[in-house]
Each structure stands twice: as C-alpha cells, then as structure tokens.
Amino acid sequence: QVQLVESGGGLVQAGGSLRLSCAASGRTLSSYSVGWFRQAPGKEREFVAAITWTSGFTLHADSVKGRFTISRDSAKNTVYLQMYSLKPEDTAVYYCAARLSYATTYNYWGQGTQVTVSS
Image: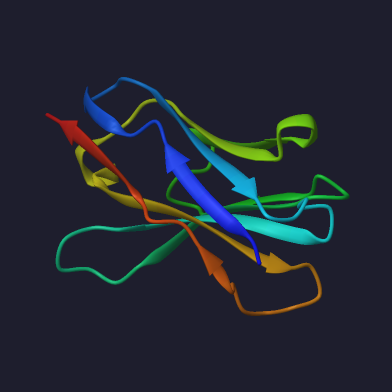
C-alpha cells in the first residue's frame, strides 16, 4: 500500500506561485509513476502532470505547460508540483496519485489540497 499526503495549497493572487508537495509512505516510489490531477467545482477531474520515478520522464497538460513543473526527490520519497503564473482558472482541489509504472490506472490517491487563485 502507498499512502499519499498532499500539502502546500492555499490562496494566492493571479500571477503568483505555489509549490505543492506529495509525500509518499508505505513503499518507495521507485516502481511507480506519480501524477497530479485537479478538480474544479462542477467540473470533471483533469490530468495536470506526471513523472515516471526511475527515468524522471515528465508529462504536462497543455493548459499548464510552461507554467507548472513536476519533479521528485527520491531521498524524501516526495513529488512536487511547482506552479508559476497562476490564473483564476487554476483554482481547484489538487490531488496526487500513484500507479505502478506498467499499469494504466492510478490506484493510490491523496486527500487533495485546495488551491485558490484570486483575480
């Protein structure tokens, strides 16, 4: 089992920045891919970014490309989402999730952290 705990959310003005953290426990993430997703009120959950632990390969949604960066710290078993140039439309609950690298489904989810961007 993998337990994921997000932190770092908050209220920020448009144009500001935040860094979200996703701390994993239970297992090391060396065999996993970790993703960030978000869900705004009344909208479906959407993919934001993902990283493959062993290779460091990253993928970012077009809507955040150039503004958000996913990274990992192996020593801390933690994944980060650095967010710059935040927009009001980035307001959502942000979740991290993990899946085994060969799997297609994210099996483990955190509880989410709220990000609110004011205009």
